[in-house]
Image 1 (cartoon, one colour):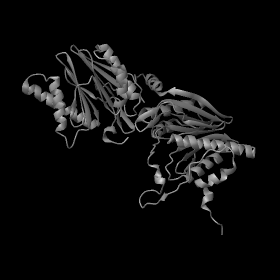
Image 2 (image 1 turned 45 degrees about the horizontal axis):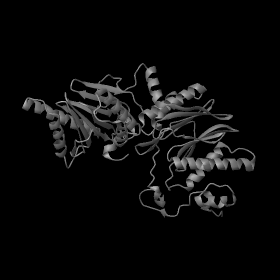
Image 3 (image 1 turned 90 degrees about the horizontal axis):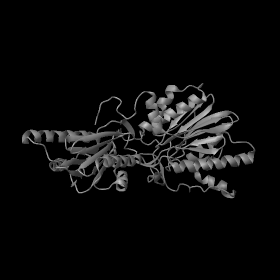
Image 4 (image 1 turned 90 degrees about the vertical axis):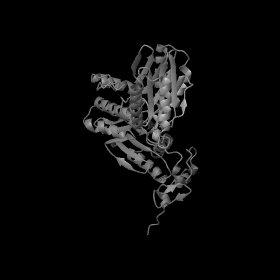
Amino acid sequence: MSGIFEYNGGSIVGMKGKNCIAMACDRRFGQQMSTITTNYQKVFKIQDNILLALSGLNTDIHTFYALMEKEINLYNLKENRKMKPTTFANLVASALYERRFGPFFVTPIVAGLENGKPILATYDSIGCKSDLDDFQVGGTGGNYIYGACEAFFKPDMNPEELEEVIGQSLVSGCDRDALSGWGGVVYVLTEQKLTVKILKTKQT
Amino acid sequence: MIDFDPSSFGLAHTYQKEDKDEINTLALPSAPQVIYKSLNGPTQINGGNKLNNFKHGTTTLGFVFKEGILLAVDSRASMGSFLSSEQVRKVIEINEYLLGTMAGGAADCQYWLAYLANHCRTYELKNGSKLSVAAASKFLQGILIGYRNSGLSMGCMIAGTDTTGQHLYYIDNDGMRLKGDIFSVGSGSTYAYGVLDNHYKYEMSLNEAVELGIRAIYHATHRDTASGGVVRVYHIHQNGWTKVHDGIDVVDLHYQFAQQKGLVGDGDEAKQRLF
């Protein structure tokens, strides 16, 4: 369990549906093999129509989120308008590349709704953006979640189905990863509302 | 002047010579070939087996009380951060009066405890009486000292009953052998000790002891990532051993214990709403 991305552990997943998007994350904050708390926040609401999920080193999760929060607040004040999800997705990429030779040890996923159209983008830790997939994963349990996603996912699901599928994928994936789990949270964003659900998962 | 022959102290190749004329023998790993002495670090034999760097990812515990010995173990096996199984049997039934617990390398524990079982049965047939717990644990210690520095990974407890009562020993790959009343072995042992030391009394009843064992393992599985799955509980008494619980899911235990305290168990107890 060496490596700076494995120090704290954690998993995130994002999915696109029909005019909706969903994000899910586990809730563990640990230090290598020891679990410290089971209520650590990894998905942040940047704007009413943009969610940012972060996995990796927890200190960088917190710092990078604070940086993005600052950027969007300044943007709102300077331009006097909301930021578009595609613009934010680009902002994340350049913010990461700004630290090319001393990077943030995070793998972000950005999800949003732009004029009703779902946007989902993922990055490596130095800002390579990938926004063409219907679902993306991140974190130590990412590969296990991929398997469950491929099995359960179908395109253009409605919000209720999407919530069910993303929840199941997260839980199945985290059950095979020692460093993720201890609770889960699912966020489903539609044009009208953002619903947040806590999942009852293994606490081991 | 006594002619001191180091090979008589249980180095690996001695065992091969002894077993040459026995028909049904378990194959022994080949003796160490290359001994590497370095100025810094321990002496390594055959490179110290760096390829298979198993860690003691588990929680096992055992304690002596007035009704005998209680053993409780978890059931998770992990390869690094990948959970390979949640259903492993970490208590190995050596024979009807001896149990061994597994921590560290699963293959090492399974193999050498089976080898010990073989030895116990042979002794019983040759000598007409059962091998004592002290002797059985000492035999295992002898083997492990022979393989010292070759990279075996074992932290096991030998618990059993014989004519002198119920006894609990801790044996590990360094050749340590300790007799004791309370042991917990593995990465989750620190959490289990906290619970165990808090509520342990020699005069506990069987029910109290089982409850304590289950609680200690549960707390370890909650905090330690390398422990989890189900709790298995065994009781050793003067007539041998009994399997008290074959597998209680620790997830159910978590929500049960939370409910007993009037909580939900979902991590939001302080109502901080961090999401």
